[in-house]
Length: 246
Ligand code: PXP
Image (cartoon, rainbow, N blue to C red; front, side, top):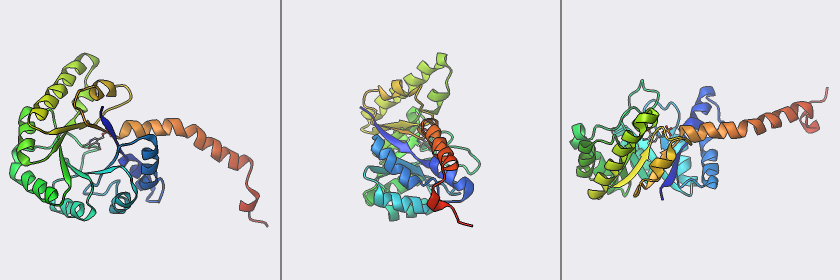
């Protein structure tokens, strides 16, 4: 059965919108683990738009599950990963102007560069996953790179119309088989929701699903009513010790 890696980037997005200290992704990671998360995933972006190095350092010290660091294949990120030592690094493509990760890593076209980074991470006992589209040449190149794991980009599956979803699912299934034949471990993620996760989770030999946006959105839906109730209570029934006497 596939395990669940919870991506908490969006919690940091809300914090960064005000450059304040709440919500704290480190505290929320604890709650994700209480809920059953098998791993915590964060993407440290070059522009630091959500997760900060401080988050990474504290997560490394506090979480009990696995820490999966998504990052671009750059020298700066490599140095950070070697310092923090997450359980796994997932190499992803990164464009400054994108809203979220678009498309998989072009391993095939950047074989030497990727091989070098994979090698350096593995020498430091950090497991490596490559986030790729479900395309045979990328799977082969990933296997050639020495990475132990691939994460299949499920964006096309998630965005497909109901009619095309079966075709996209078949591509993911075929990719899992191909990767397994090459000895790779297989994860998947991107765009998975409460509506579309089951067929992907049911794929035999799928090891881990990384899910962020949908879980954080659901957390707001489940939690907002309680949060408003608490605030309304403070307005209606102020705590005496919090009032300034005139
Ligand atoms: N996997 C990777 C490599 C990603 O970049 C992302 C998005 O940050 C996810 C999984 C999670 O995607 P979503 O937020 O759509 O669940």
